[in-house]
Image (tube, rainbow, N blue to C red; front, side, top):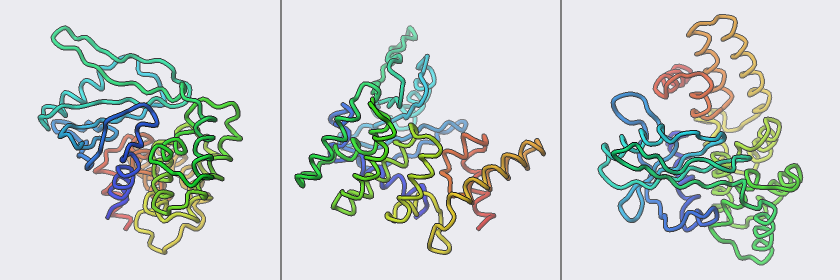
Length: 288
């Protein structure tokens, strides 16, 4: 199973069983991921699943405010034409975003999305609820997202909240549930973290959870993740420096190669280098 397959499988389970109720998205039961690279040209959506009612659930993760919905309209129009079934689109806004358009009228049609603003959710209260549930032995699917997305919510003290998140994860008694929390945190929850917090999060979690290996170290040729932080910093710095100096496609690919060696997610490499998913996977095969 590839790293991307493992990630999507874990994320599907993380968001199932009513977990999305924690952010106000109700009535969604995910069945399986759907390929999101649409035909005609390279157009990749964040995440799409088939749902139990035969529809599609399209979830976008946004760290910046969308001023127009034209991009999402294009996504969903192509997806609808390709899959021929109704689509429900939810845009999850991280951190400080508190407003965004939810409707686009193009004359011949009106396009609507559901916006979820985590800045409107009390993160301290969410962590309190998780802590109470853990103390009482009463874990529920919504607690996965409360814990995974707490750092993207409204917080009185983000630094203290981050320490609480790290301390509460090991308290989740069920190993499979712990892995689901970690998968959601590493895939959709870490956008609100500083680079230092991301490194600390991965350094602490990689020693505890098998899923971190599957997500961030494709293949695990030596069965461990020694020197992840050092490799990540050195790989990014060396790759970016080389890319700037050379100013050519070779430089861009070297950046991507270093990021792959550092175990960074393919989605991050795509955004950082502009390479397509196929080009990145071809580089990965050459490295292997």
